[in-house]
Length: 112
Length: 110
Image (cartoon, rainbow over all chains, first blue to last red; front, side, top):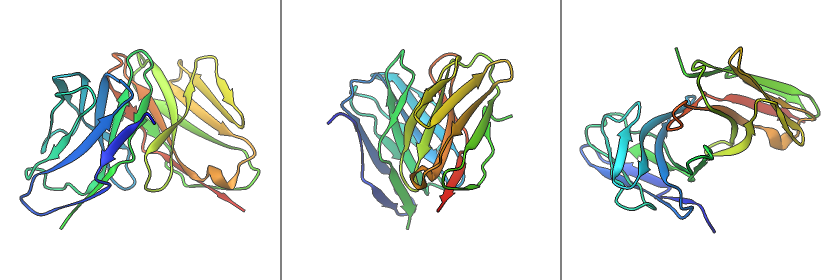
C-alpha cells in the first residue's frame, strides 16, 4: 500500500541524547515536512524539503536537524539542544500542484 | 497575528444536530484551503478541500469567503463518529508552506 511510514511509534530520550525519527514515503511525492504538535496546539513546522538534497527551516527549527538524501526518506534528528522535546511529531508529504498534505501516523517522543 | 485562527470550542452537540465551524486566515494571497479531521492521538486526515464556489461531500459543506478571509465547515445530521478535532489548513501563496489552525473540538452526544 502507498503511504507514509513513521517509526518508531513511541520514543524515549535521555537527557543529552540525540534521537532520530524516521519518515519514509512511497507516494513519489517531492515535498516532505516535519511538524511538532503539543497538547491543545496546532501543528508547527520544523523543517520542510521540496527536493532531494535541499531543505528549509520552518518556524521552530532550533534544536532539530534533517537530511534529504533520497526522495523517499526525510529523517528528523532531535538534538540535545532541544530542551523541551516532548511532543507528537508528524511527518507529511505532498505533490507539487496538488497542494494536499498526507500524514504519517506520528511518533510520540518523551523525555526520561 | 496568527496565520490561521479557529475557535477551539469545545462544541458539544446532540446527534442529528447541524454544527458550523469558522476559520480566518491572515494572508490574502493564500492559494489553497482545507479541512482536516484529527482523532485523539492520531494523525490529521484530509476531510475536504475548500473551493471558491463552495463544495459539498455528503453531510459536509465547505465555503470560502476570500473577501472576508474566512472558511467554514458545516456538518449536517451529526453522527457520534463525527466526534473529533477539525483543523483548518491554509496553503501559502508560494505553495511551499501549510498553516494550521489549533483545531476545533467537536463532541457529538447520544
